[in-house]
Image (cartoon, rainbow, N blue to C red; front, top):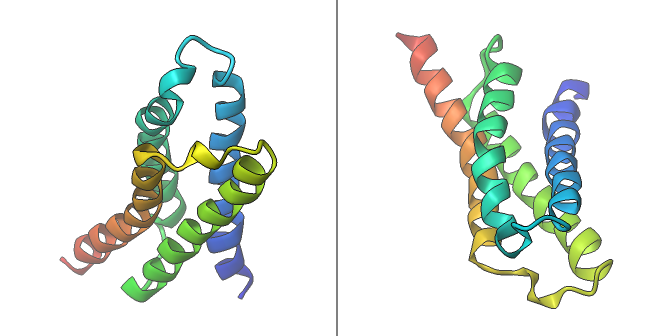
Length: 122
């Protein structure tokens, strides 16, 4: 149970927090008009690498990765709402880049899970 919490709430929150802190820094940069897209380009490969590294040594069922994917997506939605929309009074936050980000937070653990499942069964 402890490992499940690390994989879902722990890693999901840590990845969200890294992106959140980067967004606060980039908010005051010349690229603030495209902040979401810049973060997606930078942090998608980083998130793929971290997820790969985190799960590489373990053999887990695909349903486990599905739970991780759902939890990371829910964490991103809830924390974005609390710490961006409510905290900064930003109702216009939900643009296409945000929905792509939510999809990516679901697809990365699922994609890594499918790949690892296929790779380890060969």
